[in-house]
Length: 339
Image (cartoon, rainbow, N blue to C red):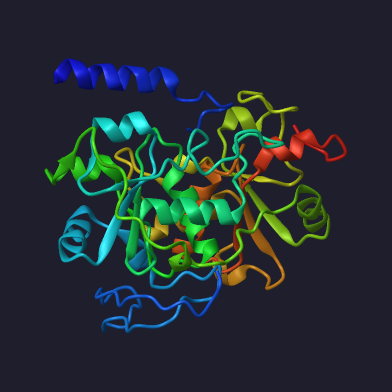
């Protein structure tokens, strides 16, 4: 058996796509009650209701970040499901027991096979079908996790599900490492999908794919604050992942996404996060003009997806993830870059 498992892992490691920079909805749909008093931040259980309009995030900041102890309680009660956003090999080596596997990186099933830019998401209807097949039902609280090597993929899935209209989402603080360190049940090799649900259960919101030329117009009009979440090396102009050109968007602020995390992959305190954003030149949520959007960007929407999660956690109302990222921007020779 050990030999067989080793062989499976080896084959998968060889097979997994090495995409450039391998970073690895509608309303009115009834949902089941979710007996978690913290979700709405009211101290009462959430009643059966309807999915909120696409793009809304229900709950307090506390409800958006969950500890391993809280997750295991919710899983045992059947009020939550865990989604592993890491790559297939990492999942097979060990995962939260009962977790559904959905690789949120550039090598996962959510991406087009031959899109005009790497890591481009599939059409919304295809994504809904995948979510239904995986059993990621909006009637329960969906808790997403990654690890220090998954490029913030849990944030990308958080952004995606938020956009579609999932009402109850959270990220596991510390990721899989925190779960394992707490000596909680770990699954290995097998599993990866829950009981499938009807595609009609999946919210029908629209994933907002920010267009490069539209973003350029917003920047020129002073209506966008761009946060570049890549490394300092990339920000300074290094071409590491097949970008057409090096550099950065005009006026972009730099904030490497891992600077928001501790050494053990836990989110820093609210005061530390706000101080880090302020140091990067990003105003506090209350100081953002009503017509201005905070736009997180990386190469292809994965690292910036995690920063999107942090922005929503901190209360930034008008925030988005430029998911086609620097790959799309630099492919358009009419758009400028700075060095």
